[in-house]
Image (cartoon, rainbow over all chains, first blue to last red; front, side, top):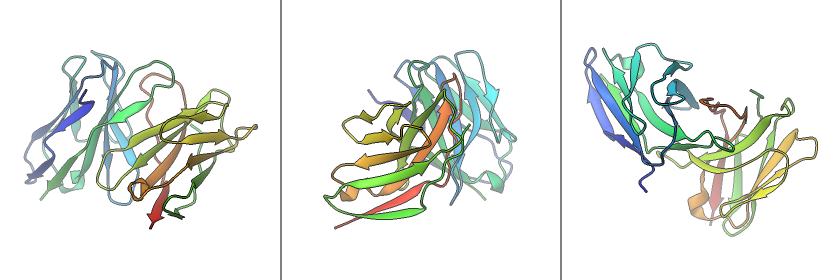
Length: 113
Length: 111
């Protein structure tokens, strides 16, 4: 059981470039999430997908798009990267059973120059 | 979601119990208390959660006061690998609900 995996681990982009961050989970969870974490700050929710086929905005969705490709995979796309999007991005998943505990991936460290 | 208050930092000697407090005086009846930790440069790791009863698992114990306005996370025998930022989070049970991470408590376990 790999849990939640994210690719790539590190990425450097130039302003205006686009890229997609990939996330997959093998726990058969229904819900998936994308957070970002900036230095000295807590995690902030970008988008989430409560179940396959649905996505909703979180606190800081501007500049991002998401795709829930299937139950396992949830991708985050930056169409035109900006320096303000330099951050560490974490993907998480949860099963709506019991306390709906979220499990996190190892993160993608993104730098936009 | 209810707001939580935690001390910004704590020290603990290796092998001793680490007791991390959290105040959540505005907690509602349907809100759970969750604890996560984040070791430097890693993703947050779930530790434990509870509603009103004390809970224990292989990682830690969670003590919730009878009025549910505060709780304590106990790491019974802290090791150097327990050095991390610990987050106390209160939220209701709902599908797709976000976790609101505050500033947490930075626990330093010292030899």
